Image 1 (cartoon, rainbow, N blue to C red):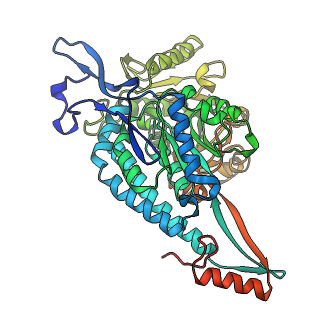
Image 2 (image 1 turned 135 degrees about the horizontal axis):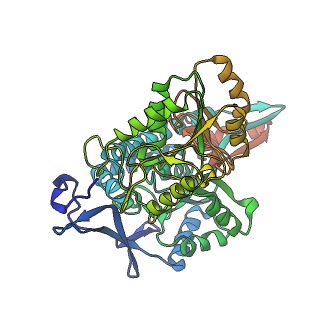
Image 3 (image 1 turned 90 degrees about the vertical axis):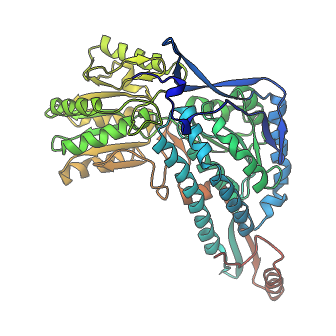
Length: 534
């Protein structure tokens, strides 16, 4: 694979000039930034006329300090105002109207955001477009889910002489931080439900994937009341540390590493008052049983391990293959890998693209060198070759427990294959693993698969039969055990995780009945209401 010259880039995908983000959103205003800026280089390198390859500058964003971070915090705290602010006391129907306004303004930026997804994190054009469209769909599904939740709550219960109405109320100030691999979608899977449930939000984009949010700042400003959405940028310890240490963050919504999540939680002075919603690492295995349909297993494992270069928490990151079929599986897998198309994100049918993380190709090369030194081999021709930010997918075999790639989450296009004779080998791997997100099982015999289901669902949160690991559909719960997650995200689960059940109750006396009837009939309360949202 070769990197393009600027003239070889299709005109419709070019960035005419670097994106200079000179502002940030606090308290409903876009403030001009006068401090230091962080340069943003694309994983797509550019070749000059002499054949020299160099990183391509695509923009700048503010490197904020603790001062601005605490200003954003105070803005969110004031907007929530101990639950008495405009946003947390607003009716669900009115909050939906604000979110619908935002969605309309967001869709107007579709082309710009998709292009920045390609340039900033190396995502292919179809995948970038899918991420944007899926995010919009997620917002609309969330709106429908909150309507259904509100409808189910729009009635009174009478139990043992007590009249009560149970609804969900917001938690407070939410700090949202998403991952670079799905910087729009996975960030919004926490930000949107947090907002619609009445919380105020501080939003820090991931290190790789900042610029693509810039076109949406005005939509956030115009669609939501002042202080409801605030943004911070810069070095995590500098801008996030003070937020957590303040003790004023009520919910931490973070998708990243368990190491960083542990640091953030420990910084909070009142951990019992902090609710955490965490999506963390995973080392999802696949188990290929002796009777598996190899065509299906290879197809699903190829997609499962190498979609978006394997940079997904739901990716298959280690594959256990029964020794009786390992040779044939490896042969077919290597052939399929070598047919994958490598290139730039905008190229038609491209599957493997440059990697955005600094130092990533060096790290993957280290994993391969370690495995080879301990008895493995790269069994697909050309696998594991690095060229600046590009890394050719590598199929490693046979992998054993003495190698780093056995336990480390590679988060890239390296596919470890482990031969096994006894099923206890992969079962023990899952049991001893620090992670417990998902697993895939490939086979045909119902009895063999049934014997694996019962022990494995107590180790992972999702077991996939004859298909790759994945997050969707968004109506399904998405979570994990051990160091893989805390809290559950789905369209409906997310509404619950960013809220708490609250109850208004009164003895069933004539006076209380009259009070409640008057409040409801005259719409004196957003909480105590029988309004039905269509």
